[in-house]
Image (cartoon, rainbow, N blue to C red):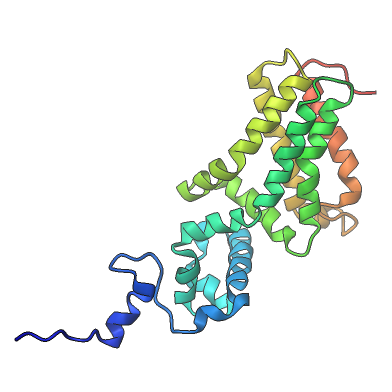
Length: 242
């Protein structure tokens, strides 16, 4: 008569919560995930390191070490490194949703005087506000790095989270600037993105100004809006705003 062997502790730990072979998350010791701060610590660590070094230069072990958690805990909460990158961006989804909602609301008003500047403000102001928050500085740099990273993980992240914003911006601008060719609006958007990322993420201004200027300074936001608005009007052959 055959007897059923009890699973060893090693085998039990390899399949937490009843998940079978091929489970995505790593095994961890009982009780480890109960600390509510650890998930946020990992996210903050990943955001900071991805921003400072770039996605490819950061390992899961680096993230765990900075967060002060076991390496297995990163896998338990977030799976593989690409999924962790996506979660960092998803954590900021509310900021993106605000931008899209505000842009669409302005576009729904139709064309009108000052509409281009209103759209630019709705598109950029939440970014500057986030940058000015305690943790937003790292995320601003991370967005810039990810936008310029040719790797597949970065490309997929930008497409997933930022392409809907681009479409909302272009649709609203097409209403505010009727008759402007789509390709010219698209290039104008690309130029505007470059200006925004440099405004909030490039710290060279601090060195070049001898410390008199700081990246993402909210006091300069109106200047930024005027600059981008003038560029959009110029690209579409409109008279500059008075």
